[in-house]
Length: 293
Image (cartoon, rainbow, N blue to C red; front, side, top):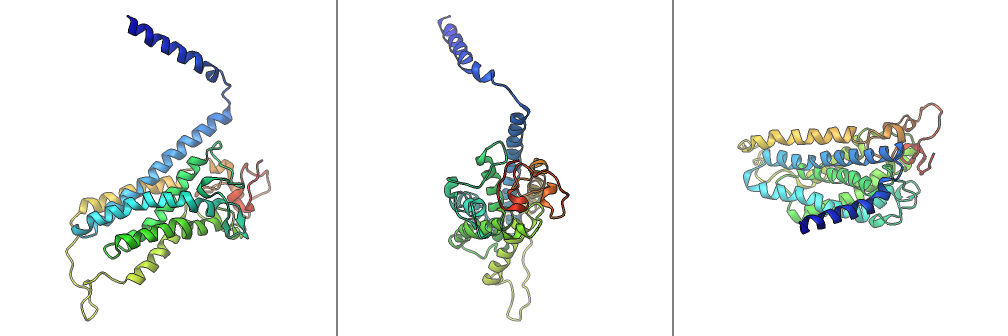
């Protein structure tokens, strides 16, 4: 009986303390901001699902002895890539622009003078969604250099991609840089993410050359056993396709806000858009600055 009284007293005290918060007025703006945060968090989780998909696909078309190495590379792409993007990459990409080339403030997400979060003021969820794409650009190199790059040098590639290469390229468009001022349009990261990662992978593969023993002295390919993980090779693209959907449809609120997201659907993003009131945030839609409507 005494235990029940204690529990009841605690519940009543909790209700009494929380009641002022419940009494706050709920507006359409706050509801929409919360929905944006939840939806963008879900989209980030789907993009995260792409990384195990890359690992499964790479393992499926690789040799069994390299499976652990491949899994570790993809895991460290996320761990080290997110830390690097948090410390340096996000600032270079979305900080105050210097001559339309690169950001100059906001390192460790501190002191972002010209960045306006688009999901109800939540900078953390903006960072999470962007960091998933930074890691995606880096992991493309892993697949192109499968079974040919040691673990240590690959970590250097991850730091370089997420801390310098990808943020600088992203700043030119999504950060409101010179490429964005020219009216360049990027759909779902097709250029900023995938072309950047693809070019980096091509350069790395050209430097490393083919796998040792793949070609004979005359330059003809030697016969190799087929992949021993057909299930991994098939399930990997399924995971990647779910992440691709999220990267395309993740931020639907961009249609109304014209936000600095990888999917900029707003009509204000087009250089030939008709005249009309500016969106609440025009950072990545042609002005190179952040203005509130």
